[in-house]
Length: 242
Ligand SMILES: [Zn+2]
Image (cartoon, rainbow, N blue to C red; front, side, top):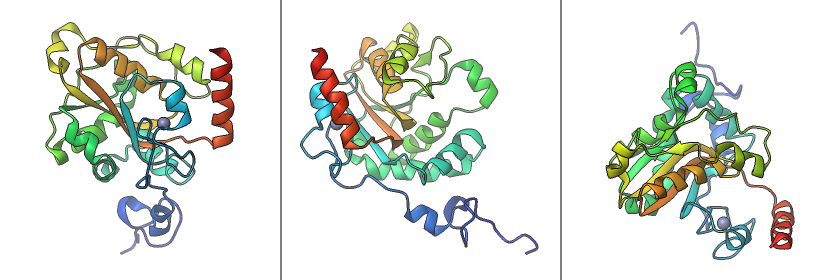
């Protein structure tokens, strides 16, 4: 009573996870029609698959995200990652289960994007695993915490361009030979917190497919969606190079 509950975002009356109702209501969930390939919402880019997916097939089969990564969703997601707010993880797992019912039904197993052991030591937990594990439990899907390993430490992806990000993570992931039977012939659902360019998730998907996975889908809490004008420009560059 001496210390009334405080909201993290400074708004009135804390609701779930210490955020105010107003903060939650501003999160832009991607529960409308989305691109079949990458999960981008159709109000940005109408069609069956968006122009970017048509121009360049990805290493994963389909991707979905629960919400847009923006100034509203960034705060709770970074708190999970850097501020020990593991109490937010079960709620994030519920978001994921709502967003990707079909991908989860089709999945034989759920796997998190791994951290390098050094980074795991420093941070003490892998935020991707913290949301993948309760998602697997919630949906009754087998959980593969260590099928995929990061075999070399990569620099942080922050501040890198799309091609810089791809180079940074190329060949960084592997399914160790003794664990190959876990993924052989399996459709794996890869889980991470945020998808920016998707370079990390594509590198993971390649490693899983190289180990014999029959399919790899991707599910993240949030995705970065750039305005259509920027992506059209990218696509023009892509077609000019071909
Ligand atoms: Zn797409």
